[in-house]
Amino acid sequence: MKSLSNVIVMGGGHVGFAVAAFLSSQGVKVHLFSRRLLPITKTLTIKAIGQVLCGNYQIASFSGQMQAIAAQLGQLPSTVIICCRGNDLVEYARIISRYVYSEMNIVLFCGSRLDDWVFRQQLLSSGVLESQMPAVASATTSPFCCCLQSDSTVEIKAKKGKVCISAQTPTLTERIFNALQPWFSNLKIAGSSLEVALEKENDITHIPLMLTSARTLEKGEPHLFYHEVGPRTVGLIVALDNERLKIGQAYGLKLRDWVSWHQAQYHTSGLSIYENLQQTSAYQHSFMDTLDDRYLTEDVPYGAVPLQTLARIAGVQTPVLDGCIALASQLIDMPAPAWTAELLGIAGLNPTQVSALLSTSWVKQPLYLPPPSLLSHLAQPTSQSDKKIENVEV
Figure 1 (cartoon, helix red, strand yellow):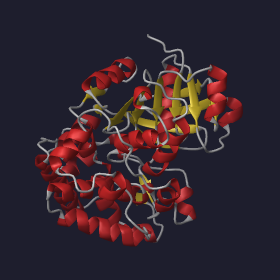
Figure 2 (cartoon, rainbow, N blue to C red):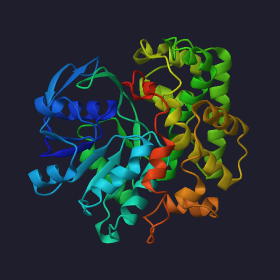
Figure 3 (cartoon, rainbow, N blue to C red):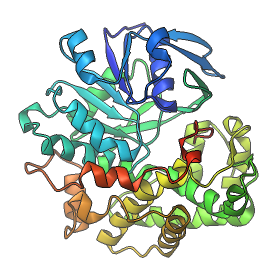
Figure 4 (cartoon, helix red, strand yellow):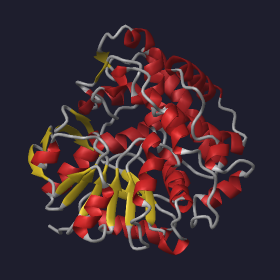
């Protein structure tokens, strides 16, 4: 078993806990950063339950101040794993911008589309020089299906089968892959950051399920979110996924459809979306009981909206996607879209130019990004229920 001296994991949510516990089980010294004050500050122990990992796992340190971790280590380690939501991404880039260097490898386990693009632009806007720019890779999904059971316990339900990553260049992608592959054997190399962005499926699955369950969720009645799906909801997922595939075609990409993608993650063999959802054991106890959840507050502004942005640039008509965004935005009172073409700094570009930006090295001029106050406002929970511990995860 190979061992790293130190690794930074940024994010105190379900994915951050799962990644930290898993790396600790592999003999890695994990330094966990979270802006949330957690009980593990004193114990430095994460309890893992579930089929993948069971036991108490020690981490090297926990802090809400990156300066404290840097002071302890002298220099941040070369491997940084960021597990966060889209609305945290700009702030996380600001926090770590003071400490990055060209040999650093950063991988983002974030469900948001174009997350690596946003992250790199924020590093540039924060004053990071091109010569200091680290390798920054986006991933198609997180390594685990997991959920928090408490502020110190994470349930890891399944290890996903195929997590594709891509950084700025093939060389940097391979560098990150070589650094992480000994621990995450499910990592694969994707062709480009654009391919990774368009391969993400969280919003394709979550938003239709939330919309068709709205009445039940609004009443606060818990139900099996995935296993109680009906045929018309499946049809909505299919239609939405078909639009995603057309967007990929417009950029010259042949993407996996939902069924192929899900089979690769969960080792299922169903011929339809419904069959694959029923075969996924990790979903057996996945209950949902509120509309005010990241499946809308995260997946709409940072998943569906940038997908719509890429469609508009490519001239692809997306009536189902447009309708889902409009309905979901009304349900969660989202004041404005988040990652639009203007906010991403890609307005006025054509598909070839966008492909070039997301398939080669970083740009030389920082692009406009919305102030942190705007991004934070867009994804603030609209009720106390959104602040509860997450209980389901694709």
